[in-house]
Image (cartoon, rainbow, N blue to C red):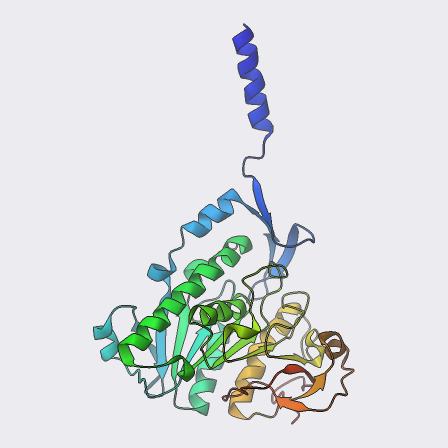
Length: 334
């Protein structure tokens, strides 16, 4: 009888324990928050990670599941596949190591068909004869479980870095010929890629890098991830990161509410529309600010200006900048 009592007590203790223990809290704020996906649909996400969340992330194998799509002026609308380790497949594509290479990395719940890619692929090809490689990491980013998608951001970035290293070894291309561009979770991932290529990538652009889960995250975008790094902030403190992250940080319209937008998601997406227009026509000129707080209020009177976005890295330039845009295309006032 005594043994039965101890058994029942033990079962009661076990049943009282959480069935899926919390192992990490991404932010100090509320555990459950609504975040909108790329189509504007709100999703209730859990910013506290559990053992099961990590188990789901561990099932993602970016070396096997990431897909690389090549677009060039010879194939601007239908991509050609690239596969790490397959020089034979590479040899029958339109890739040229003599051209600059742009690598595009989408965000949460996105894929190769996202608006981010549909805007920037033609914008880059229109502006310059480049190789555009679209990274489809939807196998890691396509889950409603935001914690899992965030955890997948780092291994995906490390895998893309291995792909770039292989491509360079196979073709003789060099990091100085690259421009990495990422949005949201991809905005941090391009930094992870750059640091895993030794910080030698010529130009890295983060487009409103994600805020939830990144404030105290050591893997977030860093100024040293490339030779020249730039971030465009359009929904600070909500979907996008608030503080500075790069050599040059731009806060259009203060970085929070974009003219012509009525939702946070619209603000968040504006970053790549601004980038696309900057490639074709330029025109976005930022006024230097003392801090990101003065940039958010537009109270910027320091000497110096800098063009936002564009094809060419502003190597050696740095600072915080404010500018205003129109509510509809053309967004640039310059």
